[in-house]
Image 1 (cartoon, rainbow over the protein chains, first blue to last red):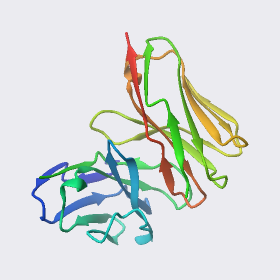
Image 2 (cartoon, one colour):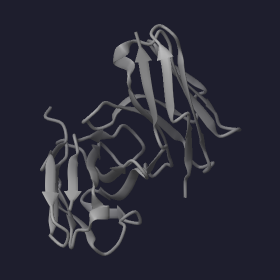
Image 3 (cartoon, helix red, strand yellow):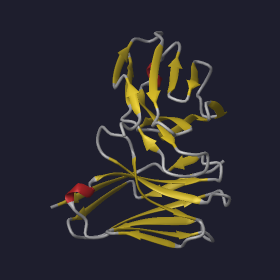
Image 4 (cartoon, each protein chain N blue to C red):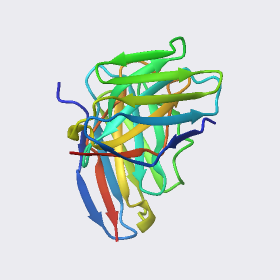
Length: 114
Length: 111
């Protein structure tokens, strides 16, 4: 099994630019999560999907952030326009089933906004 | 919403000694309590979990205890080894599966 695949692994961009982070969950998993990790705030849940439907987006910081899951094998997290305070590591994770159970994390996308 | 507090933030132990990390949670509806280990440059990985109908669970050198009345749970690592050095996160989840993580504990095992 290839695990959760995220791209890009690293991105450096300038303030105001659009950033798109991508995630391919593990095949057969029907729950997908986007987390943000910073030293100050730790691991924060941004949004999660069940069967491609957004269930809870209360963690999305503001309207500059949006996430989509057009099909079971692909999700994007978009930041437009980006700001320096968005600099963080963004993790995607997937899980089999809707009930509480093991999350499988990708290796993360490290974003730096200058 | 759920609030998870984790202590200590850093823990330095001698190889072979035990390490204990403690967490408290606020939502009595939470019923699933996993522990994740994160190595540098990687995503967190589940090492052990416990559900609210169980008080203790052990897997080789790792054990987790849960006290639902007091709303706290702990991770115990015995006979620590250098490869145990990492950041450890506790988490709590309700039946919907929404995980709230603690702030993390940096564990350093010195030879």
